[in-house]
Image (cartoon, rainbow, N blue to C red; front, top):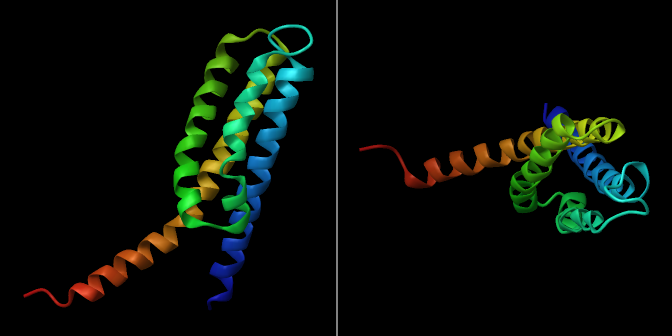
Length: 132
């Protein structure tokens, strides 16, 4: 019976890792080739740098990294929504791709951490002993 949660956990890690890597690539390509703010690219390409910080922990399955990265990714979600609704033309379509990738990462991270949080809560209750 434990095989299903393990398989789900692996799939969530794989999806989170893939979406984070895809988001890093998208941010770099967006600001250099696809739809840069200035011809030839802009310094906005540096927005990909913070996404590199959690990459190692995400690939390794670190619960702590998943927790804080799920909050970091919300900044990119907000940027995607703002640019999707305000940028003209192709840049708006790329921004929607950013929204999709951040949403995938966020939900995979939350669902990956959830069982561990429940187990920790149950262990804490068990350590506290029965209510008096």
